[in-house]
Image 1 (cartoon, rainbow, N blue to C red):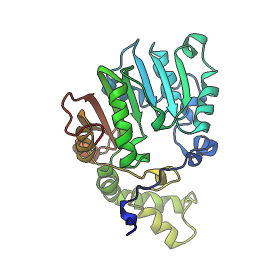
Image 2: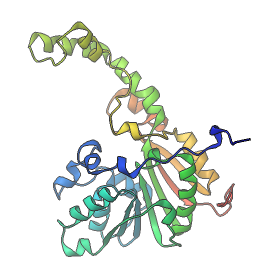
Image 3: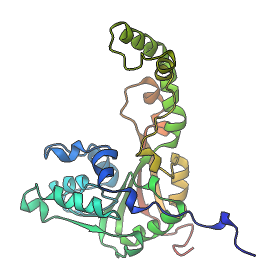
Length: 282
């Protein structure tokens, strides 16, 4: 009998989805690369959770435009940025040209698929920021095993990814709590002729009662959203000791009260476990 469709691995997202238009218009954060003095806002958390110090050898997997690679080089690290999108690597090379030679000498960018990632104990830290959610579990199984081999003894894998708890629960709760104030604001905008949603009652109500987390061309590529618990379980079963926390910079009271598990972004600091629950080849 033919194999059931349910046993087939889902096809990975095409590199063609991450084209020049994606990096110029869809992916947030273009302003990080427009001015040389603007640093990637993920840098402080990456340094903190990745235990990064000057002089380290860093791998940024899924480097995108290359802003974080350059930022790490500016703090005297040697950084390699890898991405499977040729447009990402082209963008990163062009971006790096703006910087002094001493910065450019500490960075390299390569187009590479995960199957070609074959480093052995080479990196102090591997950065895996905002990439996890673009990969299926079967891809992560391959990649995490390769990360374990690529890390030096005592090295750290740092991960950031959107929090499914935030998208499902905290964001809607925050929107609901803000409904009375939003209703007043939108009504006042109509009287001042400044509302963009005054064309009909339906448009007005749709804007006021916009509760769910907004979709965009970018978020539609998020095929593997996780909770803090689920991401920790997967990492521990793939041979890592995982310290999982959430970061949420919103001042909203609900964010302050529940950021530990419902915060907007999951951050994970991982070290290799000497006794993984599952072998790398399983």
